[in-house]
Image (cartoon, rainbow, N blue to C red; front, side, top):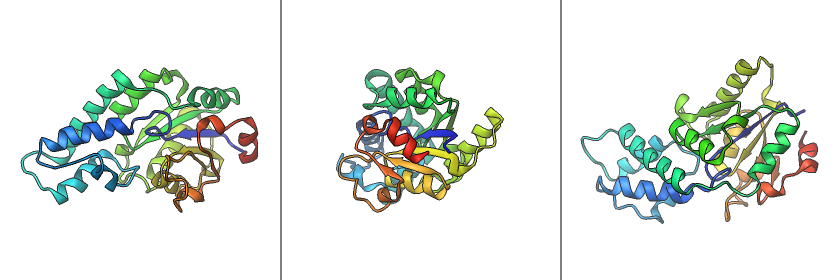
Length: 225
């Protein structure tokens, strides 16, 4: 039985990938990293931004500016882009309404910082629908480690007073690392992969794979419940 629903954010409920590319190129180029949009594909999806920055720092070392500070600069750029241009992915409103109609608490478990998460929720007008927000910055490791999902479940139970178990949570993810994280946490997972990622082995470990949130309906929910 499904008792809670947890959403990833970037690439799932908002098409933010272009914002990350733009912001990373802008900030890292100022530090001497010859980053291109094609190069940004080298970093695995689902990483925290400080982990992405450290990846590039090892390849193109710079001095004086800490990894965390660079990550914060990038996240501020992204928040500004979300505020100006952010749009919900197709099907977001309907999936949220479906889950709320079943009385399920909703959470977001994202590799982004709280600044970016809060900006996205405000832009999309879903702040009032989300019970818990958990950033991977609050745990030791980002996805594919399960820590962010386990932390989200802990916070859901603390806030609602429920005793929800991992196997009673349904996660929506778009990345291979995200699916791996959710499954490692013992949760059910629906994958909504980006184009070209559908056949990734980690994506295929999801309990259900759909092309869009628009394809997830009452019947699909009941099959997973």
